[in-house]
Length: 370
Image 1 (cartoon, rainbow, N blue to C red):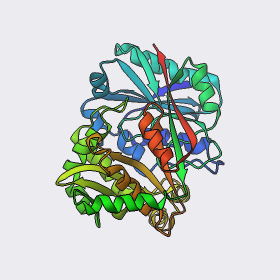
Image 2 (spheres, helix red, strand yellow; image 1 turned 90 degrees about the vertical axis):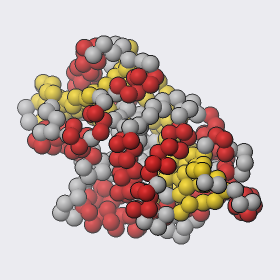
Image 3 (cartoon, rainbow, N blue to C red; image 1 turned 60 degrees about the vertical axis):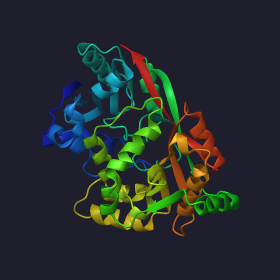
Image 4 (tube, rainbow, N blue to C red; image 1 turned 30 degrees about the vertical axis):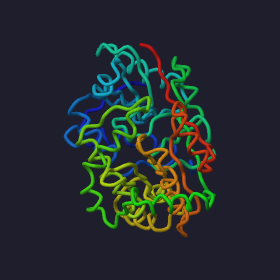
């Protein structure tokens, strides 16, 4: 059993790294493959803006031709500089239920971080702010929202046996009941005053035109979140394009206050079932599964519902809730999933519970000193 550092940009090594969870979960009905091209992009430095400021390595544990585990080890310099800390991250952790395999992965990660004069390692945490962090520690009987980690229960045990402890938790849940009609009445009154309005989109090109303004309000809305750090313009543009690959423009909404952008709703059909059928590939028929999946999905993922602080308390919250309700009220959707609310963001969690969200999944980010 040997550890091997993969060559970034090497197509064969990319296939090896990508294949690991497919083997571990080949008989599991809830695991969802990544979006096509995700691993290929992040393992090819020239195709991903992360490498303009930071570094990462990809490792696997092999026993002959069998691949038993994998991990990415990350030094995100922009995060470290913003938070004034020296931290490495691990991501894409997958392993068979074997302590020795996981120990080899984490021992390498610690040494990798030590050589870069970093003093702790945390994770799972990815290459962009949009990469969903954490291991699933509660809700193993629930299908994951698209792009959110699903893992077997033993993963947490392996991480903890390697000296990691809880850093923080994130909660996900669902809404299958619409807010009280009073919310819509309040929203109508807010709109009637003429200060707030809702911007709807009819095409992807229209969304792209708004990227600079969306980027600005997105950063302002989340800058007080505990693990926030600013994305580069290239990273944010990649984020928007990734959303547009799966979203329907009419499910993306902006809240305007006069000429100012005050808030946003990022929603898209959940494509988990389509990705399972496509086996994470576009060809030969994966693209067709994804296209059909967009049209028949009965679950909508809500992966960004935010209002700038200065507009809260002016009626903007009611407008935001009302627009979420309209999305859920579309005849095709049976429920909406609210994705990863940080336990340290008390106001956001309270707002979600006010909207009727029932939290049923928990993801945990771990940390360990080096």
